[in-house]
Length: 394
Image (cartoon, rainbow, N blue to C red; front, top):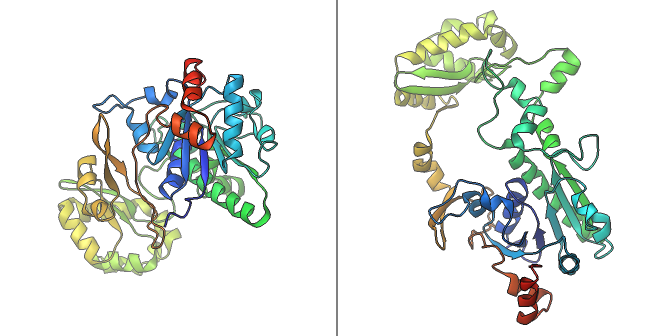
């Protein structure tokens, strides 16, 4: 059973946040129609590219979708878009705030067309506030939110996470928001606007860093791979690589001291409780580092696992794709893309026992489904679609 099979979503987004949000819902059965500019959206021209010269990002984030092209800056394009809205449940975009309003296609305009429409918009800073009209990408938001201020090692220049963290987070919030809004519509018949921003997402990801400053007047420093309130918790050098270890409870502390043969430290008042261990973090890191130094990664992981202590190595990408856990959980799934061969895609994260979702179809080419969508949904003839193509409306 595809739990969202009766839901139609118009996906006007590009790059990561919006497309990934819509992909999650498409995996669960929603009919997602990707609307691109005539000739293709901007994300099609951003690498890396497959051997078939397609954007890998587009292939990853747009599986299970239908694809149409539509010039919403033309009068005919606006009219066609409104007709599609009439027959849809959700509209998703990640344009800069105000852009669609300037075209007469904002939420207030389209709720007149379909009062119960759910409209989800992902922007850099949100629909309100002094930054609302500003555009930004993940790197900028990581800097603006303070994430880059606390990332890295002492003395290092600002550094962002290795992936687009706020894009993925905003996508997840928006997918959740859409499902909640559809639930509300089921109960009341009302649609609504969902306003999600990368900046708000980043602020929500800041753990206790902001209250640490506002309440305790403490600015968290850069601490590398350590954690601020548990010790020993860090990444330690073994003979042939690195191992991450996290000791954050009294039970783990007792097991760790027993493992390393330092029961003399177990009940030492200097290390009783996380607060005391954090105060003496450098000493404990030296103890842990000394224990790790003469062991291989394999030896250390075996000993730590046997002691039921959370640990892991720092895997290369080569090791990740060969990881038996990744394979068992089907987190890399090959899907055939015409012209590019089999492309590995991220699997479905939510393992649902009754409605598991499915990866069915590859990302569509620009306008691949124009005839089907405009024909079956809006009732246009093939000749009418051809004429719109000649006029560069679709």
